[in-house]
Image (cartoon, one colour):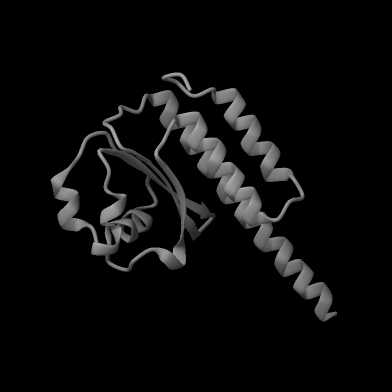
Length: 153
C-alpha cells in the first residue's frame, strides 16, 4: 500500500461490487475490505443505524449528515463520546454518514492507529465510496421490498 490509495482501482472495485448479484452483506463486507486495503486502515466498519448509540458522538454526526475527519487525537471528543464509542476514538479516523435521500443507513468508519492527514483527494474519494455504499444498501432494500410484494401477490 502506497501513501495514496489507487482511486481508480478502489472506485472500480466498489462499483463492480455494487452492481454484482451477491447478497448485500457479502457486498458490504468486500467493499469494507477494499476500502481498508486501499487506505491502509487498522479498522474499517459499517456501523448500522441500529448500532449507533442515541445521544452519542456518532448519533450527533448522523444528525448533521456531514462527514467527520479527525487527523490527530482530540481529548474533547472523549467527553462527547458515549462509553460504547470509546474504542472508535483513534489518533486519526473518518466517519461518513450513509444516507439514501433522507434515511440514515449507517456510518462508514475508517480508523487508524497512527496520526494521519487526509488529502482533499482522499476525502473526495471516501465521499464517492460512501455514496456508492449508500446506494447499494438502498437498492438492496428496494429489491427486498419488491420481492416481498411479489410474494404477497
